Image (cartoon, rainbow, N blue to C red; front, side, top):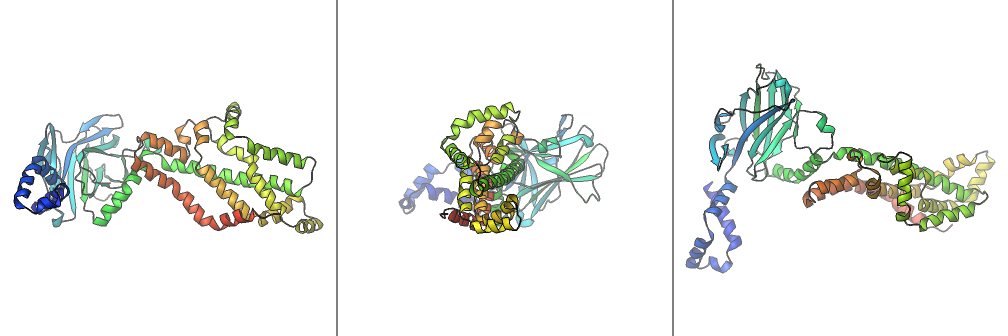
Length: 447
């Protein structure tokens, strides 16, 4: 530890003192007297001293009854140390806060195990959650917890990295209705273990086991990279938003491709009264800004009882998109009429011509339209803002905005959430870039 303190002080001084102040011994000593003080030494010792501070251990029942476990004993005696060669527990106090300092040295082992058997003051079967107040040491070692009661063993869904130097509350909780809600997940789930052999089975009591696992430098870096993504998944029902976005993407892509191709087929290959006039009217709708139709659309959907549902976000695609219809019409006009005439001679109707001849020939254009629709639906923010109030129905783009507001525009968490949202778009583009480029190229051919 002494060597670590010396290295820490040297690092601090190298950032404070200038190069010339290191050359003259007298000047260097004078600067040391000015710069080095008790607070700096304390900060350095705290940063290199490997210890885990354990505060109160609380449990809560389903009926919201709370108990501080081992409250009648000193903090260092509330846990049984199963690895005395690696760690030792010492009672300490900071101002009015008392705790047990777990001083450890992983050169003697790679794991610390602490156990404690307690009477919670209520039936163990009514236990809802376990809370531990602690202060990590920023080593990025990982803390694990297991619980035994009534002959069953429960283990934490994931380990908690020991990051930062701030006092924090870690909560472990059994599965329940809160897991499927839109609440911020401030807890780690406790799941029943498959192996229950030798599990603690003492009436009215339970046993908790804390394990601190040593992390290699690679594991620590992986934990640092993963931390913000875990926090994002805990703060928002990310997978609920993903499911909603996937449903909207699939519905919009299928309806848009089908409706636009069918309408374009009617404009390009069929002769019917008023066709050109209707086509010009459809093109005229492209000149109307979306802000003009926003309020009428809202009033129509609300009158139909579709407000605060997903219906307005996908059903409108069944009526086609004027720009996509125009693109497909131009592409279909470049297809030779001979194919259609041959099919008519063979007895094909117009729907069979559309399905078996036209659609296979315009696959690149359909793929390009599908990609454009996917990107537009996946990134759509305005429509959910207008039509949806229930957070359970948020798609991913709007959920990201709500998350950003929820975390106070925290840049690290917002960027992590944005990357998770962007990954599917990047993957789809690389998987379908051939069709995308081919569709954009071929739709510009004059026919």
